[in-house]
Image (cartoon, rainbow, N blue to C red; front, top):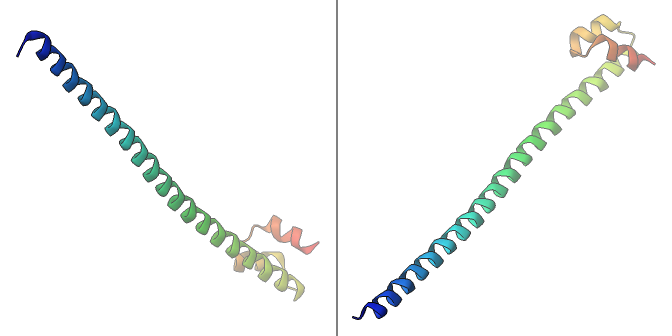
Amino acid sequence: METKEAKQVMELIISYEQRGIEKGIQQGVKQGIEQGLKQGIKQGMKQGIEQGRQKGIEEGKIDIAKKMLAKGYDVDTVHELTGLPAEKIEQLKK
């Protein structure tokens, strides 16, 4: 092979190699983004479920505290049995 032809072949090889590297990087980025989104959605759902559960527990305690207050229980007893802060129970009395 002549030097000029050899140079052209090498340039083509390098060109294809660079294209392959660029394509590999693009695919890697795309897969990384997809995986990150899936993981983010999963984590978000998990946190949402936990927050909802905590809110439900809190609402249940408040409902019980209201019923206890309506039956004449004092703030200290309601606090002891529900775990709600005394200030919150005082607000429920109003």
